[in-house]
Length: 356
Image 1 (tube, rainbow, N blue to C red):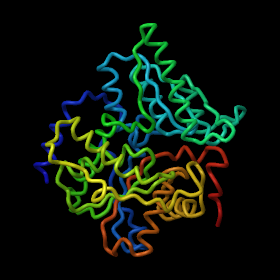
Image 2 (cartoon, rainbow, N blue to C red; image 1 turned 120 degrees about the horizontal axis):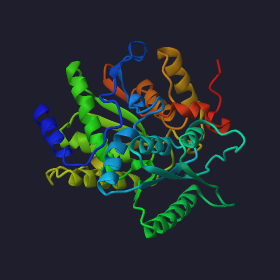
Image 3 (cartoon, helix red, strand yellow; image 1 turned 30 degrees about the vertical axis):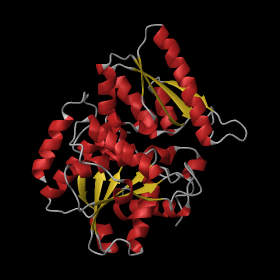
């Protein structure tokens, strides 16, 4: 596998990239949870990606996305998310570091209080992003509001381009082939760390929304010929039957982008493992299982997860271990994608985390 890793790194070098984060991020065993649950439980701390105290997994994607934007001579960067989007905030911070102008369109899944700006939305405003909050119309779905936000942003980009300002569009969550390439590198990084510890990784768990991280991890796994490790993706929002094929297609587009051998493919049926059992009642809406998982991690290891992403990912992983879906003695990695700023967001997002 080491030779395949080196070949993969060479392929990655062809993509434009800027330096934003602090890599490699920490990878280590959580001893107390391992002892309690009967597995060897490791954590990959992409909440430490940087570039500020409030970093997260999107920084890996943004190194390539902003590299592409700068290579194209862009001045403005547009992106999207919910009002408390981790991705949008990390995009803003990355743009500020690189001297680009960030414009974000944020769907008010949970309506913010303009008199009490919190969490990521507060950080967006401190960093001086151009923020457009798109409120949902009566009887409008979240997806419909997202489409409306996209149309509004593209109209603004069209106007700016007509005035001579080049714009770059980053999709929600950075879920593009360019962005997902960052997680090919991330997967190689984790496997190198595991090998240095003499660990054969059986399972990797993470929370998934738009799917760009999953696509990159799966592309990385296939690229280095890792036929052993299973990546289990815990959904944080509702998805239909088209989601796994969509993610496999994105993974394969990412492999094509870096010039991988065309025979290396991610197959939706064989490779994509998602679980929709832990996101209810909806995106940015807490549930008792995720709240318990956040409390358990905090009270057992002193580490913080968030109610939107990592709390639900942790809930799914813990349930899989406790129910026996994951055999005792397995080497299990939880990929901590960040997002703890949501612990300081609106009450509707936070839920009750202080229960005994």
